[in-house]
Image (cartoon, rainbow, N blue to C red; front, side):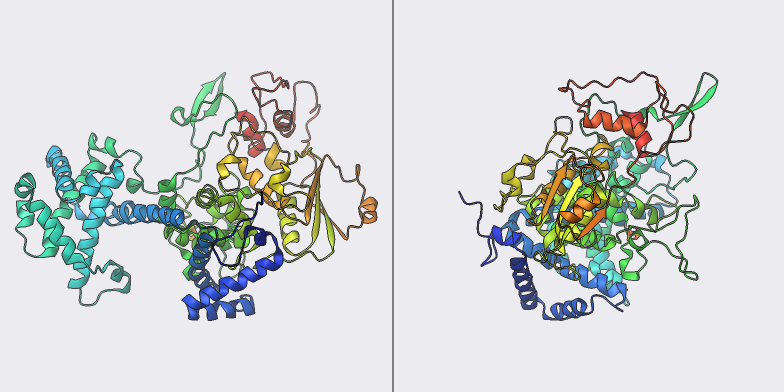
Length: 634
Ligand code: SF4
């Protein structure tokens, strides 16, 4: 049976997506479709392509990318015929933004001034609760039927505050531009509907008598909004009611950063020493080696995006570019002496947040992939230089790695998600430097080491048209031929990524990814490595071999004899750091990196494995880096 199938854009099939020359055609088709929809944007983008951003203000580039990314999202969705799924995903995100986060900013965030001199102990909390419940049932049936308590309240609050802001805007002679977003075309109709619903409900008619007596729409709405505001203020301040909002992101306020206490801990006295221990409440007990961290859900992710102030339009997005001293141009440092370099890849973070907020995961991923095509190997649990660079230096920064990984997983787990990610690494119109992969140019490179440096370099070289052979000292398990499309066959398309997804404690150690494979344990989802491995293994001008040591199995002379034009050494530190401790290899002492490798590479971590790894406890671990922490945890 043919693996090829027609795509949703006329004239293209799945096989075309693996042919550089057809990717060039696809670029032309994309550009034509943009031109049809928005001639001005097309022209501006062409100019950007022409100058490659040279001498263009960064804000202009960001603006162009933010405007172009939705076209990429739409085009790719059409290509894979997932428009409905994408629309549903987008609607779900926008609903959250329009309810929870409007409520968070416009209601929760403005309570202090609203009830400045009020004494809550004089409030009848039971009545406030009953009023809100009745308001929902009588006039907001969707909210009343929403099983999600936070969204239910938010729907009511957001709708009322939007109406209140609309009438305030009308009353204002000189409204500011930023307030114009509150204009509603159908405000009066919405108000009439609410009024009618309340009047038709016997209980509501009595309870909201005062509100209903207000002839002016603005007063009527403000009077109802007061019910939500009071409930919210009570939920913040009343000990009993506040239990019902535990974990609500709409009530979350970014905490102050205490740089002297970044790792929350308690102290305990043990054998005459003061020791640090993790807080009892935070402990996650585990048995085995399954993934311990399910990552943020959509709402938690959107909270982080809501916390962001999208600095790219002022060129102050230090998460991406680092924080510089205006006079010297040097990077600034935090009060802990950490140089604020921002994302080393200068990923378009702030721009990506905008697209995610708009509900466009594919557009957001296309923005990430411009600078970070290997994003499955970054993000949550891997790197956080961006967070250290966030403009919020004194309060909790935006959790960018969680957002980045959420964008990626939202795409991966939709139909054809793996193929979407994979395509964007070979064809990405937002990447004006290399919008589509080039055909093989006859030059070959040997990449030594297939950890993060090696696989990233391999990807870039293949996209530039080079043939690449990657080698690694570790044994690398081959992937099924039908998935990689070995021997010139077309790879079997992956419609459902969850069929590739494996539980961490059951997965076969593939050996690909170097330190990312053997050095990291259950805090990170290694299925991401499979995404990178499979994506590279499918490239026709890439091959990889495990169990090959450079300098042993193959020497540099042999590499030249084999016809390589270039050798790239990407084997990282190569050796573990041996600390200058006398007898440091004596029985009872073990290198933490060696321990982790033994645990993972022998399969000892698996319950089904016969491999034996004995450790005598208690053990002392020296060091405070990732290797030490992973070792301590295991
Ligand atoms: S993540 Fe922080 S620095 Fe980056 S755009 Fe958002 S607020 Fe600004």
